[in-house]
Length: 333
Image 1 (cartoon, one colour):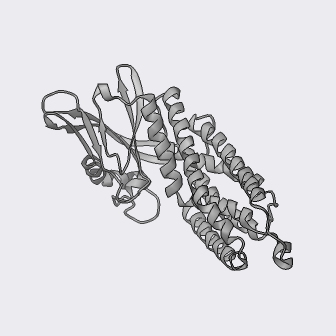
Image 2 (image 1 turned 180 degrees about the vertical axis):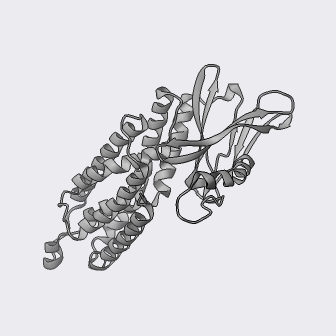
Image 3 (image 1 turned 90 degrees about the vertical axis):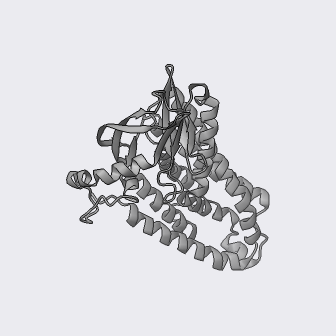
């Protein structure tokens, strides 16, 4: 059972001196509370009742996104039989995006499962070991949820599609009819395709452990990319080709999506299925946002007040949020 220290810090006072660094001594002092917190969130059971957790090893482990508290347990049920169900209830009240990734080894096969706020119980009986199709469906759902709840990716998509809703300065000055809907849809299609292609490439490279970057820097650059994209709408310092901007920053966002998959160690076959499902889910979530959001912005784009008032306010707000995230996420060392 591995839990990120940054997640545990939401539940347990680990950094006792408040210096934003966790020492070995602080971790050892917090161990009893960490252990109680984790064990209270894990309930194994079978037909005879709840099982007990017997601690075997305790320490730390390092994953791509930071340091984790690591523990190994033996599960002892009242009748001596294996557990048939797992109920997981950690951090859902503090982080709606938190997920428990479970690797199940049974009869020489390994499968992946995901536990979340709406699916906290997992059937561990051998006959119900998740199939590849079940894993695929699970990760499609998780991809959709991650995209729709992830405010940073939503804001980035918003900034990317705003240019496709705007008339040119000449249009506004001389009252020329705004760009036809067909032209705007083609522009939007190019932007979305570039972003999709770019983040799919790096998502696959990172998830398959071919290429990895420090997640703290990735999250910082993602935050910075939102601000730069917003700035580029008002002052195109990075050029007018929005699809190129989408592709460039999409490469970074792919590493961010990959971090959500975590370090899945169940083998390339299981990971490939999870990766395909998660990527499809991200695209479905992205499409849902565009289907809902673009028609509204396109309609508003005909209004001068939208272009001269609402858009600058949105860009300023998004830029401010981006800078806040950059400061918040920037590695301390």
